[in-house]
Length: 74
Length: 156
Image (tube, rainbow over all chains, first blue to last red; front, top):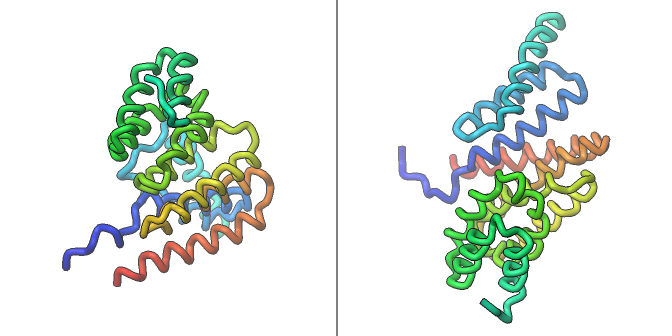
C-alpha cells in the first residue's frame, strides 16, 4: 500500500462522532435497524479509543434490545 | 510572576482561587510563555477528566485556551471544547459555545480544519436533539455523513 500522507487520514474520533449522533437520532426516532447499524459503526471507530464506562454499559444494554426489535420486525 | 499578558494574569488569579491546581496552572503559564503549544495541549488533556478542574473549565477555556486555540492541534482543541461544553447547564449555551469554537477553528489559519469542524458540528447536533430540535439534528447528521464520505473519497 502506498505511503499515505498523514494529513489526509480521517481520525477515527471524527468518524465515531458522525455515527454516534446518528445512533442517538435513530434511538430517539425508534428506528431500531438504523440505530443498531450506526451503533455498531460507532463502536468500531471508538474501539481504539477510551470509552467512558457509563456509555459502554448503556451501549451494551441498547444493542440486545435493538436486536430483539429487529427480529420482531422481520 | 507579574505580567502584561491578560491570559497569564488570569492564570495567576486562577492559581489563588484553585490552590490544588496552582502547580499545574503555573506550569501551563511556563509552556505558554515559551510557546510550547504541544506540551500545553498535553497538560490540558491530562487535567480534563478531573471533576474539580471541570468546575472552572468554562472560565479556563474562555480566559486561557482562547489565547492559543488557533495554534494547537484543532481536533484536540475540539475535544477539549467538547468536555467544556458539557459544563454548561443548558444545551442552548453548549450550542452557542461550540459554534464559537467552530469559528475559532475555521478562522485559525491552519490548513486542515474540516475534521475538527465536523467533530464539533456532530456535538452541536447532539445538543439539538436534546433540545428537541430533531429536524435540525437530522439535517446536520445528513450533512455530516456527506462530509465524512467526501473526506474519505479524497484518499482513493
